[in-house]
Length: 305
Ligand SMILES: [Ca+2]
Ligand SMILES: [Ca+2]
Image (tube, rainbow, N blue to C red):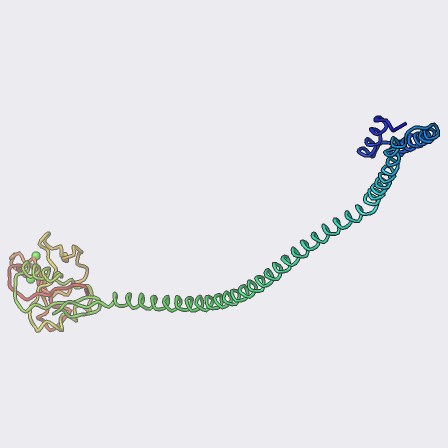
C-alpha cells in the first residue's frame, strides 16, 4: 500500500515547521514505508503487478536526503547560535569599544590642545600682567615725585605769596605826601605862595584835599617856624563861634598855644577871631589873633596819600 496524503502532509509540515517533532514524523514515515514494502513484497508473492511499486522505492531516498538536509540545518543553527553569534557580539562590542576609545582619544587630544592653548594664553596674560605691574610701579614712583615737587612748589608759592603780602603791606604804609607838600613826621604841609583871607585860605586847603594846619606839638611848631620865610601865615585856629574859646578846624579845643606876648587880645574889639603866626624870631611866641578878612599866607596840612 502507498503512503497516504495525510502522512505526506505531516512530513512537509515537519519540514516547514522544524520546531515540530520532526523525528517522530520521519519515524512514522519510515515505519509506514517499511509497512508498505512489506505489503509490496507480499503483493509480489501474491502476484501484484511491479509497475505500482516504483514511486514507493523513491520515497525513502527522498526522505533520507531530507533528513540529512534537516540534520545539517539543525547543526548549522546550533553552531550559529552557540558559537558564531557570541563571536559576532564580541566583535561588535570590541568595535564599539574601539570606536569609543578612538572618540575618547580624539577628545583627549582636543582637550590637550585646548590645555596647551590655555597655558599659552595664561603665559601671555601673566607677561602682560608683569608689564602692567612694572608700568604701575613706575607710574606710582613718578606720581610720588610729582607730589613731592608739587608740595615743594606749593611751599615756594606760599613763601612768595607771603613775601608779596609783606611787601604790599609795607608799600601800603609807605605813603607819600601830595605834590608841593613837605613831610614832617606823620603829616604833610603846604605853604602858600599867595595871600588870602582866613576863609578863602581854608577853601584853598580843602581844594588840595587838606585843611588849615592844626599845631599839636612844640616840634611841629618849630618845624613850621623854620619854613615860614619870616611872613605871617594863617593857621586853623579861630574863636569865631564863641569869643575867647579857641577851636581848631577839626573842632578840637586848643590846649597849648604859642602866642606872642599879650596875645590874643582881640585888639580894640576889632573882632580878631582868626590866628596867624611865625613872623617873630621866637618860634614859641609867634601867634596873634587878627581880623579874619586880612590877607595873609596860609599853611595847609594833610596826611600822606
Ligand atoms: Ca577873637
Ligand atoms: Ca591880636
